[in-house]
Image (cartoon, rainbow, N blue to C red):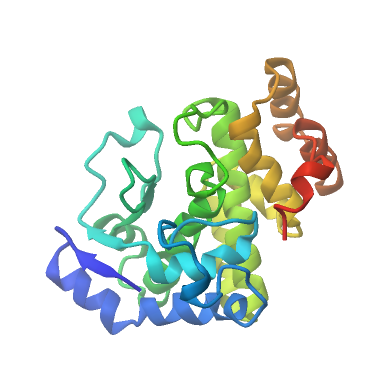
Length: 267
């Protein structure tokens, strides 16, 4: 993992290192690295112009590569206006700009305020946040090498529909990875945190833990293909009501039709 301190307090940097947060993240993601991942191929087979954070297939296993290639910057707190910009309190994912690598920021002061003197909660919250931000990278259409960077995304995060779709799936990916790691206590903590300490669009992800890569692709590809405004409104009404996972999965198929020409992009 590439971890660099920018302006986080030294005592919190020492704390995150002493608690081996990076090791917890690596151990949790390790199960993905043991699967057949199309990105984990010999470097010589990768086109020389393809950055390491680029993916060819819609697959949450791509996180097993992101954990080694996307830089993580430790910060004191988020320099932006949390309420105005509608962003996370504990961490942020920043998209690639002008060909430069995407990156993640982790806000140690905020994590410390929330967890207090509880080292285990500090460790779990830090690790959960990092995995969640890497989940955003797996949903980032700019990281897909099939997306034309000269195009504009048609479903934006700063819309209500975009935020609900993005954050629910990012949390579903996060919870799935933690669940599959076999760490039952970490999984119980992450699930409870999502349900009781995060906004409803995040909590929705708990219902989606059994997603497939088709569901992930529905969220990611909608950014390129777009979604009719009436469908967006109808989906939001359903998601804010009493949705079931089966119903949400049916909606994923309805919002973005995965045609035969797109199936080969999904692992």
